Image (cartoon, rainbow, N blue to C red; front, side, top):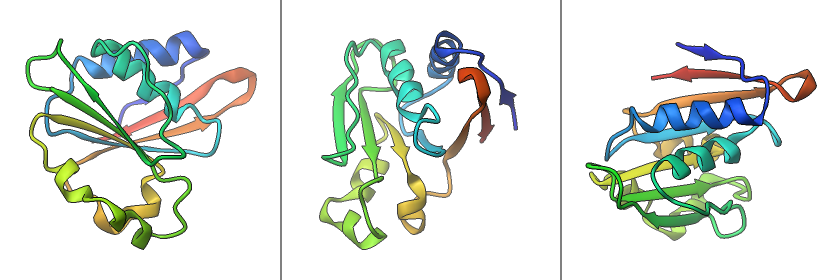
Length: 142
C-alpha cells in the first residue's frame, strides 16, 4: 500500500505519469476522495502520459472515451465520473460491464462508491486526501 505526499500540482502530475508507465490494457483504477482532492488532476496526468492532450472531466456526461496510440496494450482510455449519480441503478443506462471488460481499455473511475456493487474485484483503488497548503495524501491499494 504505497503512500505518496505530493506537495503541489506538479508532483501530483508526476505521480500520474509514473503510474501510467505501469498500467496495461484491462486495468481499472478507482479514484476515491472528496471534492477537490485531485482525482481529475491525477486522471489527466495519466491521460497526458498516454499521449492524450486534453482530458475533460466527464462529471455531467458520466463517461468520456479517448483513443490511445502511444501505448503497446492500452488502445482506449475510459474516464468515468459517477459524482452526479444518486444510486447504482442510474449507472445501468449504459453497459459498464462492456467498458470494464475491454482488454485494450484503461478504465479510470471517479466516485466509484456510487457503483461499488458493479466494480470488478481486480482493480486498483487510489484514495486522495487534500491536506493543508495544497498538498495531498495519495494511498494506492492494488
